[in-house]
Length: 238
Ligand code: OAD
Image (cartoon, rainbow, N blue to C red; front, side):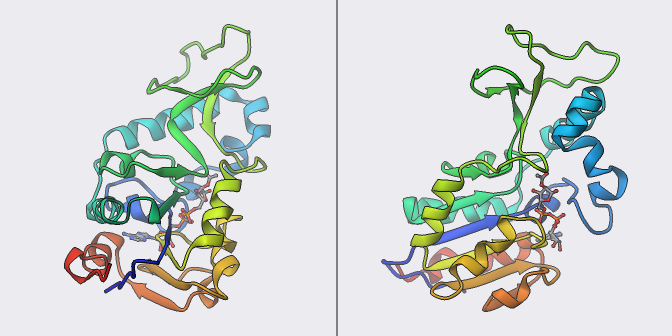
């Protein structure tokens, strides 16, 4: 059980594993997306320049899968934690689905972008809500400026979103918890090392992550089974 004092600030980093029990495939491991798709063909600026249709096919498929998914008890436990801690919880996700929001989390930071947003690849038009799917032979969407509309996703080789806010929150946190992330993709994989000299560091997931040695605690199990009990309301010392 996690004891949280009135002065604690909690940073939670979630990864694909937190949405696995909602039916959204992870990237690595058995059934992982990167087993069936090559990252460089669907999730990089190079892929976008070379074959935007294939890129949209991939993200259209992901929009369909995520659009049908519902939050699980891990998302709900984190939303309840936010209700209790308010801005003393910083919820940073590598996930591009909206299941944290669907479960009631109000302050989610999507460092890798959002699946249900698109933006222009040329002009400064802000990212906009977009649930459309663009499967060939459909015409690919264009901006008024003539640029191509692309998914609002941080691709490999691009800079993750909200880095300044994220590192400020890491500097302030006293408890760091990573849930359902394999610990191989930077910069998120190094967040734990950034705080480990002064914060309590906890990992939750069914397998040990690649960066396990930087954590002080590891709770093996599915997020949907571990988190509701670990974050149980009645045990909080606030
Ligand atoms: P990965 O697919 O690399 O890792 C998923 C992790 O979830 C693994 O460590 C699994 O053990 C764990 N897992 C599986 N089922 C779980 C469950 N029920 N509860 C908790 N954990 C579970 O996903 P990420 O680490 O999130 O980036 O991947 C990081 C980034 O790599 C993604 O955001 C994506 C990807 O390429 C971009 O697309 C930019």
